[in-house]
Image 1 (tube, rainbow, N blue to C red):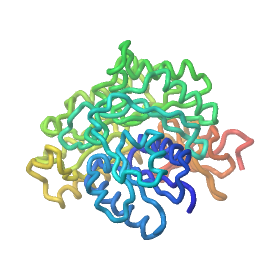
Image 2: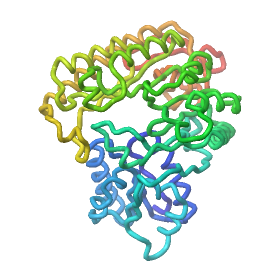
Image 3: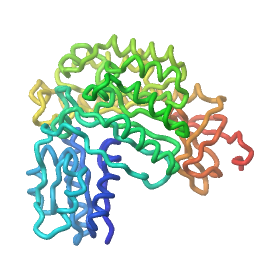
Image 4: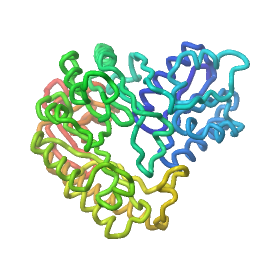
Length: 427
């Protein structure tokens, strides 16, 4: 191995930052190097990061291993103590070209991790692509000013800070000109975008600027949003902008008001239900996904039942279910815990109900004509996504990155099947 290899663990923001890391490390002429961009959202994520490092050392004994990302920022000493690790780099430092320039010299520091809470600006780098020309991520925000009791991420990312609108628009335009039909806006708390910038523009205004100034952009998506922070301009954009995709992934976490308070969330159950009802009136084809935590400390069976019922009450389709993971350093880790087996059982029930909701949603799509963004093809089949983010399997004639029209002909409960409407694509 002579090139720089970057392994991404965790979120879409990490995926964007990994491309910046790759460019900085390549420009610094680092060779035989693996950079592991870690996640720290749960204790399990940190364990997996350490396991990945150990496996890398076994598979590539001569490579230089650099660990960065949230786990490295929060627990630098833990990774520095690993004999497999050659350098530990903080979340702010990983975005700077000079960090990798220094790592290319003899005698460079083994640990380069500073106080993330002192960072007040988001380092922004223009990138040209993410490998295949399908979907690209653009960072619009970093950090978080909230303190949910289960979450350690603010201490890995620092305070909330926004990328100025002009830089975001320029990055989107650059990627569209490079051939990307779909852009995803990403960050730690993207609905906080603009609060630290002059002018009072919020995320809805940013969406409008992107769509107005980049007319060739075919699809714009939002990563996970906090529905209680959604501004009126974003609701208007959802209703009026067909190029803003009708798939919203919500940070709900629980359907029980007492648990939401103990999580220190800023919404009540009724707020979540009301938001989904309002947005569905504005955009009838909207599809909701959500993050839900099973087995949060003090959660009773009745409290958990409220989370199960939230799937129906909000009309949720795509669930990300997290069994509660006790994270040292968080207030939730000091609360009375649910027995481990109970956590797993509740997570399984949430996933089962979520899968049933997905199957019902997919069944309702049969017979409809939809536009697909093709993601990959093999000799046997192609796979694309609808505006609502459902997967559709087709014949293999359209290339990855193409936008094609299909008629939905069936579903297996997990993904749809479709036939091309364009004769040029049909087998």
